[in-house]
Amino acid sequence: MRIRLRYWTGLFVVVVVGIGVARWQGDDVPVDGAEDGAASVASGVDPHDAPGPVLDAGPDIAPDAVVARPEAVPEATPEPDADGGPVTRWSRVVGPGESLAALLAEAGLDPVTRRQVSQALGEEFELRRLQPGHALALELGADGSPRRAELEIDDGVRIRALFGDAPSVRVVPPDLDSVRLAGAAEIGSSIYAALETAGIPTRFATDLELVLAGTLDLRRVLAGGERLRVAWRENRLEDRAIGEPLIDFAQLDLGGDRYEVLWPGARSLRTRIYKNGVLLRTFDQPIAGARLSSAFGPRKHPIHNIVRMHSGVDFEAPLGADVLATQAGRIVYMGKKSGYGLMVEIDHGGGVHTLYAHLSETNDALRDGQRVAAGDAVGRVGSTGTSTAPHLHYEIVVDGKPVQPLTDERLLGADASETASALAELEQARQDVRLLARDAPGAAGNEG
Ligand SMILES: [Zn+2]
Image: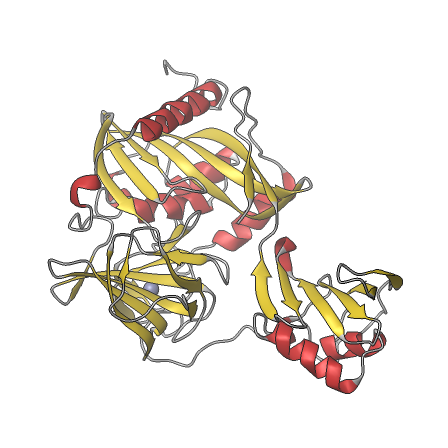
C-alpha cells in the first residue's frame, strides 16, 4: 500500500464539525446499546460464536429500483498501446440499478468477452454489490479483445484485471494522504460521551476499551473528571475523508496515574502501553494500520444474542489487506477449517501458536512446514468461514488453549524493549496533544 505520510509537526487542527462526525457516530453505535461503547463492533462473526447462518448484506439497491439514467460519459479514444497496437478506452460511472453486464454490453463487448471480463473482476469483488457511484474503465485492443478492466469501488479502491499473456486480478488500494489531528476531552459519564462532546470520533472509545482490555477495565475504574487526550490520523483522497479515522495516541489521566497508548503507524505493527512513562505492555499485530474491532473473551453474539467465548481478537481491515506473521515460526497448517474459513497456523515453539483466520487467500509462496520470519505475509484479509464482513480473526494459542493476545507475553521474546524511534514517536505524540489540550473546553488546567 502506498500511503504518503505527511507529518504535520507545526499546528494541529481539531475537526469537530459537520458531516464527518455525524457519519462516524452512525458507524459507532455499540451493538449492545451500551452508551460507553461496546467491547465489540459488528465487523464480523467468528468461529466460536454459534454456527449460525452467514449473513449477507446484499446489494444496496433492489434490482427493480428505479432509475434515472446517470450521466454517461463514455469516452472512446483510440491511441497507441504500450505493445504498439491501438487501444480503445471506455469508462463510465455506474448508475442506479445497473449491472456490470449491462455496462459491458454498452461498451460494445460481445457476450464471450463480457463473460470473460465479469469473471475476472468477480474474482476479487462480488459483482452484485456493484453500486451507483462505482466506475468501470476498459481498455480494448484493436480486435476488441480486453487488455485491462478496472472497477473503482468504495473509497477509491480499485479492482484491476489484466488480460493477455499474463492475466491477473488484484485489489489496488487508493493513494491517500494522511493527516494528523488531535483533541482533548474531560470524562463525565463515559468516554464515549466525552468524545462526542469534544467532537472527537466516538469510535475511539471502543479502540481504547479494546486495547486496554487486560490492563484497565475502563467500565469500572472511571469515576468522572479524568482527562483524555487523543491524536489520530485521517486518510484523504483529494481533500475527501476516506474510511474511518485511525487513533494513534491516547493519554489518560486516571487516579493519579497517566496511561498512554501508542498505536502502530502505517508501517509499524507494535502497540505500546505505558504507565507513568514506563513501558507496561506491548502487542504485535498482524495487519499494518488496522485496529481491533472485537475483544478476546465472552461476548454477546451479534446475531444470536447469546454469550459465547471469543477465542481471539478481530481486526477491522479491508478485503485483500496483507496479513503478516507476528513472530518467526513454522507453518503447521494452511487451508480451510470449519468456522475459521481459510486460515494459517504458525508454531512459534514453546507450545505457542498463532492463527490467522477468514482469509481470502494464503500466500502462494508458502507451504506447510516452511519457516517464516516476523512480518512475512501469510495471506490476505477475507471473509471466509463464519464471517459477515472482511476482517481478520487472530488467535494466540498456548498449549492448545487460546489466550488473551493483548496480555500474553510469551510471544514477545527478547524483542519487548523500547526503541529510539518508538520513544521519538511517543514524544511527538505528547507534544501534539499538549498543543491542543490548552485550548480544549474543560482542559484549561495546569497541563504541561
Ligand atoms: Zn474473531
